[in-house]
Image (tube, rainbow, N blue to C red):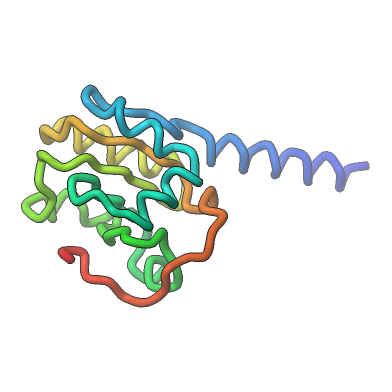
Length: 139
C-alpha cells in the first residue's frame, strides 16, 4: 500500500511539473498557441516557417542526444547572454526539461523586449522521433 501511495505521489508531481505554464503565450504570441498540439508542431518542423524559431533550453548534451527537429540550442543557463543572436521580430517556441524552466526564460525574454513567445513545455511531450546530433545554435 505504501508503495502505491509513493508511486501515485511521484506521478502527480511529474504531471504537475510538466504541465505548469505549458501553453503560456506572451503579449503577441497568441498565434503560436496552435503549435501547442504536438502534431501541429511536427507539421511546423516538416515545413519550417523562417519567422518561427523553436528553441531548446536544455543542456547541450541533452540537445545532442535528441531534440525536436529544426530546434536551436540555447541552454537556459546561457540564453540571456546570447540575445544578440535571437532576433526580436521572430516568434519563439521554447521548451525545456520541465515547463517551469521554460517559463522562467519566457519571463526574462519578455522583460528583454521579446513579444512573440510560447512556452511549449517539457521536451517529454514530444512523442515523435527526435533529431540527433549537434546543430549550431545560429543555423
